[in-house]
Image 1 (spheres, rainbow, N blue to C red):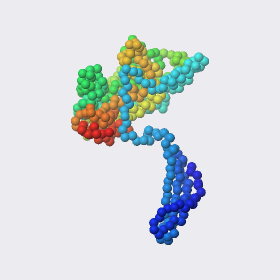
Image 2 (cartoon, one colour; image 1 turned 30 degrees about the vertical axis):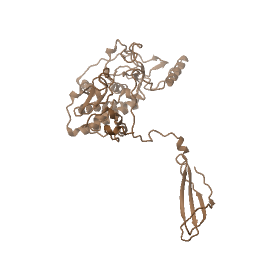
Image 3 (cartoon, helix red, strand yellow; image 1 turned 30 degrees about the horizontal axis):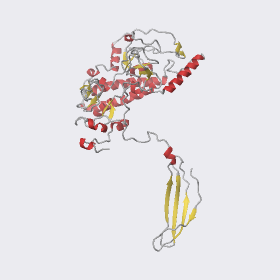
Image 4 (cartoon, rainbow, N blue to C red; image 1 turned 90 degrees about the vertical axis):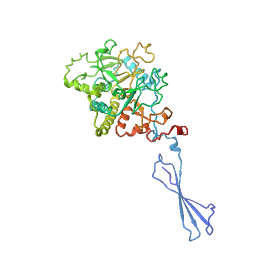
Length: 446
């Protein structure tokens, strides 16, 4: 807090107007009830008195502040409103992905587990690492499943109205009446086309990337081998995560433990025995429920919506997309999900599988095995960024003006063009406040 200083009276020479003379100047300081973290300085009140009776007494209040406290303080990124937000850089394909957890922390945890194992002490495990469910996350898992149904059904209806173009050589898509002219194709034959895209009609799997995972009755059971990989179903990774979090689906049963597993180092010493997977008795009800969770030919099951219902469906789809992303983020803070450091393969469980299906960088050295590491939310539920089009009926996007264009997740872009309101967190990413110049004006823009 500021200290109270005594009043000081002095008489400096001050040139005044004709007929007035200076007698004294009084300097006072005041005490402020303001914390030092938000204000640093002194307030002065200067009073000037004149001999002339007609002259008025004048008070001047001066604030003297110092920015030493705020100059060294770190400003949170959320405090400063950024006008534009850059997207995360595209990772090179000829290099392994960075670890989401620093390698030093991984090594420290491994050394601690090894030390406990050498002392004969079991590894302390809590749910869900010990095979038990987390009760407070079961409702979250059911909400994610319901939001997933609304998301894929809403996209299936909107794609009848909103045109989507996909490149036949790479994974890029464009949501507009015609494809753009930006030269950013990374396909195998892009050099002969000068990096221009080869546009074809897109589908829901181009907008919502199909990230699938093997379904296991017991995630802590035996690992999936390369020879037995066809004995397991492939389902969306989001649904598999929800099943392991407590969702009950008749076609995809999961083991629910009542006794926790015990581990000594990396070895499971007690997993409650092996239980054979129950035989499935498929019915019409369970089959229809499974179809609601899969995107295979889902556009054929939905007819084009009425024009008046399109904005409402688009708004519901955006809300479902945000709910799925938020729920997956909550579940992944507790449940383990592994991702390959070289390709897009994802496995939901405490450890990855042994199927030799990786064909990315230096897969020959690994005999086709995946390089498992902890997965991120974007690997589990990829956003699939696309160029934002302000005027869908205007000319195609130009390569010379690409630094003025923004991007957004493909689902958000489809819903926006269908009439939905854009969430605030995507506005800076889409650069809605930037006026795109003409070709002649672009070179004059800093």
